[in-house]
View 1 (cartoon, one colour):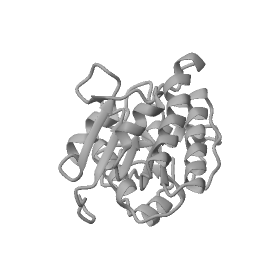
View 2 (view 1 turned 180 degrees about the vertical axis):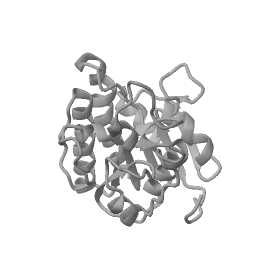
View 3 (view 1 turned 120 degrees about the horizontal axis):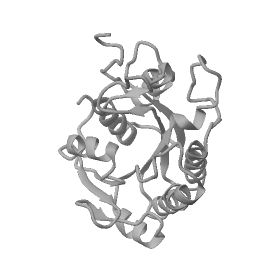
Length: 238
């Protein structure tokens, strides 16, 4: 991976047993003093993100927190989304600020801007316009990030993560927008690395897709602010 050395910084990852967490933690573990956490019962250290005291204990002394824990289902309803996505988002944000964490990285989603017209390339400056309740919880996460950055010493990067998958989406159910929003595991690890290590202040939103030939989300601002340079292309070999 490119960029400055990680310097042994202590980084806590929530939701490390999820699909993104499982993909990126082995890559980043050699770079940082990484503490992967997830709900009780898995291999990572247990952390209930709806428990503020538990979050503060886990984040004490951390340089950065990468918050991935959530129900990642665009079709989920309120009962499913409330604990992790809404309450957990607040508790993690508040705990990061309380602990004086330098950088909070929030996993937002391109679902937060999925209601923009078909064919329109979304930019980091576009305000949230979700087409589902899951996307609305990601807009909530972005609002929490803006709040923390404006009221504490913690800087926040909200990553509007695209269609994360091992391979570009295909088959009869895949849409052109899905392919244009693809984010590979390799590029996702690099996106998170830059979000933790970039020299930025305050609150920023960054789009997260691979270097796809046709892109649902513009990457110019993400490249400029974070130094993110993806390597994979969903249309490679097509």
